[in-house]
Image (cartoon, rainbow, N blue to C red; front, side):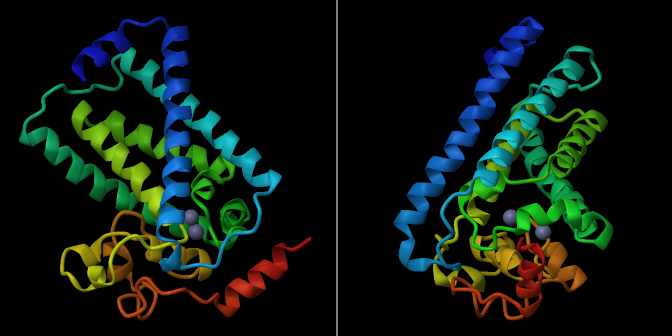
Length: 261
Ligand SMILES: [Zn+2]
Ligand SMILES: [Zn+2]
């Protein structure tokens, strides 16, 4: 990993941009492939009805998100080359601690940001993601450009203010992609007992985020359920209904009527 890291540091801006574009396209492709395979494999454990056929809007906004993610990583590369972002190369326990800290810090910051985009003033932006109440993996990328840039800016801010390790950041970003893909599968890969095991029941699941798509007033967290439990925004009966198909709430029905042309 360190050899690749050195190599990236010495690339020209154009070459670095090319590598980062390939990286972002590959991550997007991994999401689609994992999503397709998991949805087929766990088809009997669906938590939402099957999605509508793919529409043009989903493809356009998902493509836009890949391009914006690429621009954010390019900005990150420039800041790294200028010494604004400092990245450590250690691989010991301190580097692994970064993974835990990043997960907790980003989980809380994203919970707050997610609550903010559900406020009436900002919901005009976030409602695009909520058009898809029976999500597929692709919908992880169906975000309004402003919302996507806000999450990108949050990530850049977090990596500017502290020198994280490359190992910690890489593992965190892999978990971030895995968690996002999981939340939009529409099926629950985890076994029914998952929500009864003390530590596991605090982790984000497919059921957890699918419930947010079906009921826009609950489940604003991402990697963990900690903040939703703490602030009382977890879906009632989450543990009992884990892995079961989720009914839409009345509010979500009204919401869809509002969005219909
Ligand atoms: Zn979602
Ligand atoms: Zn939302």
